[in-house]
Image (cartoon, rainbow, N blue to C red; front, side):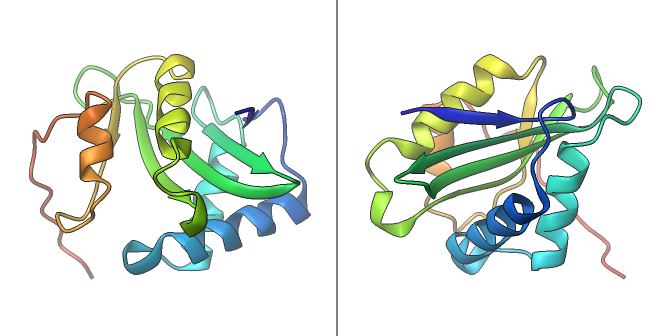
Length: 145
């Protein structure tokens, strides 16, 4: 599988940003954020902001997205992981075929430093992350206003 990598130096076009936003929104299911939030993370990942920014990794099949990851750099190594995996989604028909695993392996090779993910405790993708070496470590508590 070929993975396309986008960052501050290999920009996504406006159409591809919208296409990717819609893909992530559609295939994140019950665990999705708003389209606006997803788009903000993509825009952050593809901008160079004093060493921040991040990465977008996309797998396509017949010019159609079948899997994608958005990773944002935190700029906070040593006390917070350097990278946070914000979104990952695989097209429903492609699940169980190694697309998510391929994306995660690529992200682990490409990103420097630690990678964190916040994941819903009921998300069945937890097994995929554990298989790739992610460990349950902290409990997130959030004051939402």
